[in-house]
Length: 537
Image 1 (cartoon, helix red, strand yellow):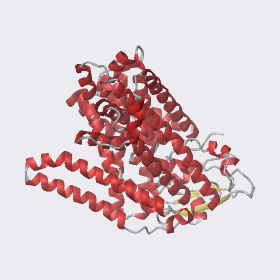
Image 2 (cartoon, one colour; image 1 turned 135 degrees about the vertical axis):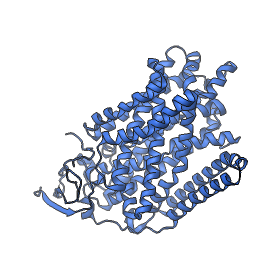
Image 3 (cartoon, helix red, strand yellow; image 1 turned 30 degrees about the vertical axis):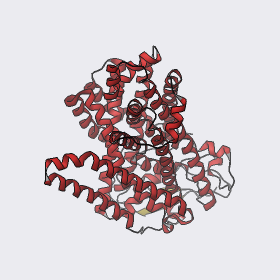
Image 4 (cartoon, helix red, strand yellow; image 1 turned 90 degrees about the vertical axis):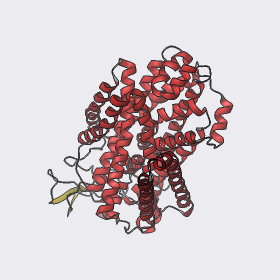
């Protein structure tokens, strides 16, 4: 092995999160082999389960139960196709990171002018906060079920999640991935138990998966909330960042292609598990409506998260209340931590700011607690539940602002080089993005237009201007050509770490040039104030 070399360069006050992610990987993961290996595939397990946590948060459980209670099995096809769309988009995020060595937020920072970058950052931060509100409310409901804690008090208690996240990140990325995997396993076991004990109609379930149908405007609203709860924009930033820990040491074309395949297969397995759990939740909600009194049906339709434990206790037997509360608590905690991690990539990528995980979690949680606490105090528990569905719809509206830049980057030959997305993949992603935008517009106009017209011309004009601004911004992102070029291998391999105060000066890092056939390399030291995601050996 050659001795370590010292590489220094001047940077503009940045601590690049992508530069801190390469970790000491086993030989099977680092080798530039051109053949598929099951051992190497297993060594890539981890990032997909971090992403799958976002597919199983309280917003998903709320939307799933609502869909099952109101429309039985009719909207299962939305879950199926939303998860398939999520896999397609996550594979694009993986492709961007492994081909360029940059996560999505960093690519946006290098591509767009300052004002556009600022706007995209604000929209993304709003999405992170909107995704955190359901986690707060879901956790508060779980604490109320388990400990009989008042809802407002439970909302305030969730602020302690920042401390738990800080303790976990100090253990390294493998511990973090293991923690999420354990939570998802616990969540899956809880819902599988309820699914087995419920009286599910198998034929109706299969029909709901295979036959797309939307029977009313209310069904469309719930369908879009399902889409927003499943395909969340911050997950694209998270996956493109965390997957850099699986980037090959020598980023040759063959090794990168194989790494993309490994990470895509791992994501597919994790998202398949999340799909099975979400389908189980819808089926449990539908089965619970079969033989219930009218008042209990109305309670479930009005407030699924609050009513489901009591109704499941009646239909599934003793212990269902505790099982449901534990599943809700596990989903809330796992999604909270994945959202915090995504938010850290976002702020470090867009603005090159050094921010500890605890501060990132505290800031996001502080911004999200306000709406959740206001809903709990002013509108009560039912209002808090309605806020969960509203946040899911807002996430769907914001999703194209992450999709369009990701699609533009992945379809740019100058940026992606030999790993550019093919014409078929690009057309599919474009059609998916257009469908999401169209669904959002139809939902917004159907929901808000009648009220706007009733309130007068000023409100109507404001709504139309907002729609035009939404479409205009997306059109700018879609038609603006990508100006970046693929960074040279030496630049991608160079690791950057900021100074203690993060102000100017040089950034230096130590990089080892591994000898041919050597599977080890230097592990970058942790930059002060930056997230430590190196594994422990």
